[in-house]
Image (cartoon, rainbow, N blue to C red; front, side, top):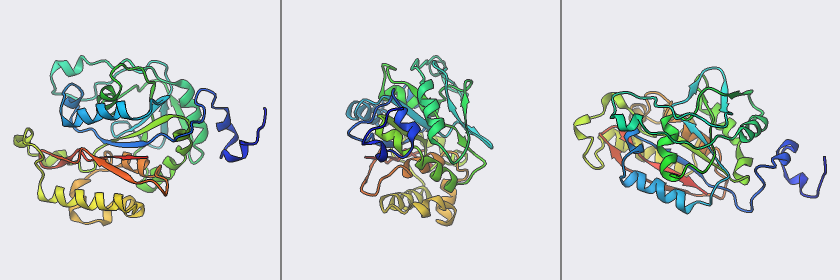
Length: 285
């Protein structure tokens, strides 16, 4: 293998071989997207309008890596490695038009293998069965409607705590230099069991505890208090209602872990839905 004077600036020799994903002068940003209802996939609203704007304003990525709240594995972390991932309709009770959606973006076996290499803290399995769940395609289809950017997913080991996911995510930092757009897709406030469905069409309708918890979480994000966010169980009763289970919260850990010391956070889509869900999202970089 040839060596060069810049080799010492790279954290890992294998990364220098990422020929499909050369180093860029500018790091890609990272995104946490509150994805909300699957219906956002086929609707045009203020949330999807912003996703579309993001796709047009961010430098075109070489590929997209998504950590979705809807791909939970236990005792293992997986990365999709097929060349043509299927569109997974992982929901029920919605109109046929939603089930008819196909998002035909290619996968990237090359990026999957490189992701497997650069994660040292745990063994990562190459997956050829999953595809793209709605936490991924409902967002990315608005950002890249031509489906011309390769997309892969990294699963969430649901048996592990927040600190584990934060540490694992930090190992993905080099991908930002390689033109890969990393997206965490979930919801910061996500309690479907007590949603007020009668208010589903009322703009920005939030319960008092949802507003309180959202403000607490945003304050911690903006002050870079990542340890507090990893230990969200200690942030009070409102946050406990906001995060009854951590599946939609864990994707946030991946994005915060990729924040550099000099990078600030841009909040967007900071709205409430049906009382107990927020679409609050953030862009770093």
